[in-house]
Image (cartoon, rainbow, N blue to C red; front, side):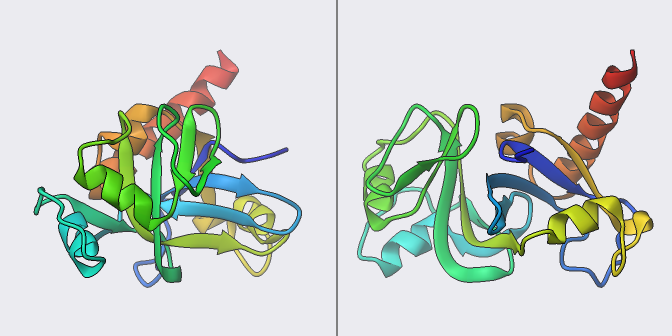
Length: 183
């Protein structure tokens, strides 16, 4: 069963030393070769304005921060967004979402041509075949006390929260979806 369109939410017992502590990861690809996602709530000090400036593009907003999408390919620029927009290098990323990654998207954003909802990230999160299954199940070398919570994503959680607030809202969403399955 594909996990595309799901949120991985870090278990509350995940140790402070773990990179994924209190993170929310959106899964955009899940194949027999790998699982790929972007972490939504780890903010960097980099602004979108700075990313654009480094590529010779003038972007008017100097406050919007870029998130750290994960510890893999940290220089890759990825934008998770609503499916009302498409660029030169855009893929489907689950029901209602797309993922874009090219310089043209930055140029278009600088001109005000943007999707209804979007979040920019540097890097991504990746799992080898079977690794995420073991993590979710809490099987060796992982444990049940620090496995992932998993739930269906929605626009509110993805685009309207940041940081620890986003993680808490995602934990609440996971809890509610689990309860809804029983009643």
